[in-house]
Image (cartoon, rainbow, N blue to C red; front, top):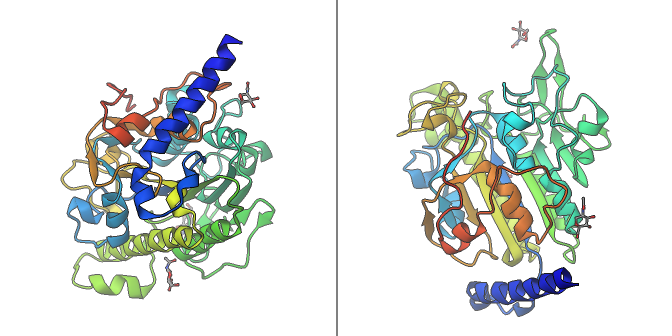
Length: 383
Ligand SMILES: *[C@@H]1O[C@H](CO)[C@@H](O)[C@H](O)[C@H]1NC(C)=O
Ligand SMILES: *[C@@H]1O[C@H](CO)[C@@H](O)[C@H](O)[C@H]1NC(C)=O
Ligand SMILES: *[C@@H]1O[C@H](CO)[C@@H](O)[C@H](O)[C@H]1NC(C)=O
């Protein structure tokens, strides 16, 4: 009984606080009834995106949409991820270091019978428990060798994307060690053969926009938009490369075009959220999964190292939080934040419960993000 009334009190207090927090939004629109609603939560993950490849880090590549979102929100300038794909993605999904999940050694390779252990609770399952519609568009890379490991059995209502770490951007195929090329593009119903020639930066954006347009706004939305961009192979429609023809290095030139697609993609996608009337009720997180790959055009200046190294260039990520439900804007946050922190932070935002999870390594960082209080984290495990 005691516990119950305390919970009730906390809930009332929380809605009072979130009411105050939304003054920013209330000045912008007349939508005063939304303050107690659970926010839509969008997580945009870019692949192999270099620290020096975003406009506001002084890049030679223009990223006007990402810059605008970041400057309207909170830039995370002391933000860490893992140096490679699978570990970062596993921490995002579980809030736990990969020394606990057996995913420490490397990425999951295409022919390995391996996956995010089934006794781990995913962030998505927690979102679903909290009443969210849950969708993944893009890359999974957390195992697929048995049905149970597939994204729609890990909490996602819908899935469209590829299951491995990399593939070609137009044909959506990967070269396996047997020398054959295999299609890796599917939804929860089976392989998708009809998108050959459709560049994934555009394809995934269109699919994410489809999710937004079909969404019933009475439910909160959780969308994990895990772009293929800007991982190798270096492929981009010529028109995106053209503005960078002054760049001598061919890898860098194509890569610049790939970043331009990513920026346009996020611009289109956020416009779709606005058109649907969801933006004012949305928290959007943008993150890289690891440092840029300098051998395929990425640049992490002034940081040393690159993807797959434990130097800063391998694991100091780009991160920012934006969206109409964010109570602050124009903030640069220099507190220590780690990719494992998103699990408790976003489940907290969703007013979800952390019951049933194994001990978390992540900590809830919403206070530091939304109010600038000191980070609750003083150390992190890189490796
Ligand atoms: C495909 O993979 C095989 C085996 O790893 C390799 O020998 C071959 O060169 C690759 N082909 C291409 C076109 O990359
Ligand atoms: C963004 O939208 C414009 C206008 O519809 C379209 O031409 C462009 O291809 C889209 N870009 C991406 C990356 O989705
Ligand atoms: C956690 O709490 C939620 C909401 O109170 C409840 O629906 C769910 O069954 C609980 N899960 C576990 C594993 O106890």
